Image 1 (cartoon, rainbow, N blue to C red):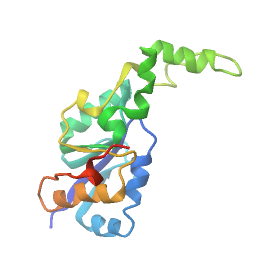
Image 2: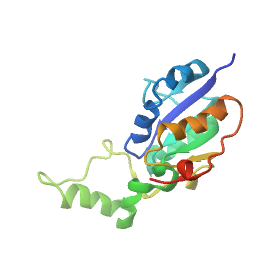
Image 3: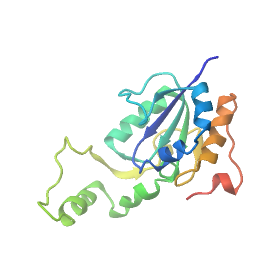
Length: 180
């Protein structure tokens, strides 16, 4: 049996979607028999591999590193799932868009709100912020949207099970497509 190459990616978000993934509990053992986890914050893999079958992408695109990563993920993945509200809409991560651009965000966070030694971070400490935070689909094509903040384990399983059978997932009904 050929196992599906699964990747999970964490961009600009809180990691709540990945924590919810772990809430799959005992089903994770069944999943592990059917997939090969090839990239994830759960594994110590430094480079996103070629030939990924399914990628769950958590978080919005907020900085240059995220932009490069999501383009690489899309190029190297057959089926990309926008995983959680930040990936789907920008959600909490995109609140900084209210300030209009990257410079006012950095000024507010590192100069105006600083208690000790106000200073902007060195360029090698913080990846350059994009002028606006974007949901994943504004940067690359998305094959499936999995809303929720975070999506619960039942929703995650409802997306993964059809893919394991070779089918395309189709979420419907308030329990599966509601945000928040």
